[in-house]
Length: 255
Image (cartoon, one colour):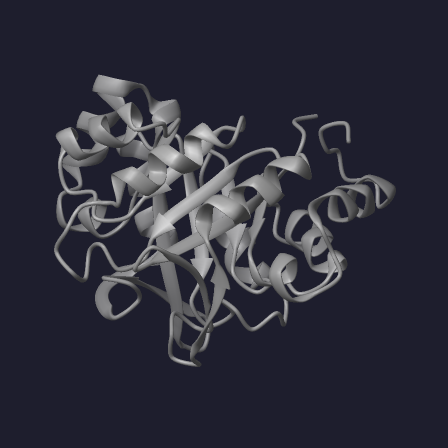
């Protein structure tokens, strides 16, 4: 059985790490410097890191490459970077700056061919399509772009299937409603998407306890679990989460 990955998410804003609630609707907290945070996580043996510049698209600029280079230099883990990606050259620059994978969100919706072009040029393993979702009416999950601010009219499962068809290597699925709340993953959403596609789905948004990670895998069928708040604001670190998953019978990489 494929082992479940445990992935910390680092969110960058104005050069600092932040942790929003519901993409900023419920406020946000400053949680330190990205280099320091990356070093701490690196020492706890995660499987990967996801590093997102959350204001790049809204500000119409590229990722903060200097920060990415420093993070990559201080971490020996596979690194996914995203934010402000609009072109093949943007993907190439992120890979050159130290990313192993590139996350595409808004541009994937606005330019779906970018998924295919990126997969053909760099390999499907490099292309992560990030999908941010709100439950806009009971049982209906809509895709949002531009940092969760812009509704697209796309239904989450349909868009995930299309992203996979175009060549995405995996999906980073975030529940905007749960993000930063620490109330648990939206396992219904995760399961709907994970069961509809053949590529890995990374569950993100809502983890607050170690059991929530187990729920995302068992109930949501996630291939990987990503989180931030639980590592920033509770006594659970990555080693403890992986141990909990292992003891619960979830296959994880040896600790």
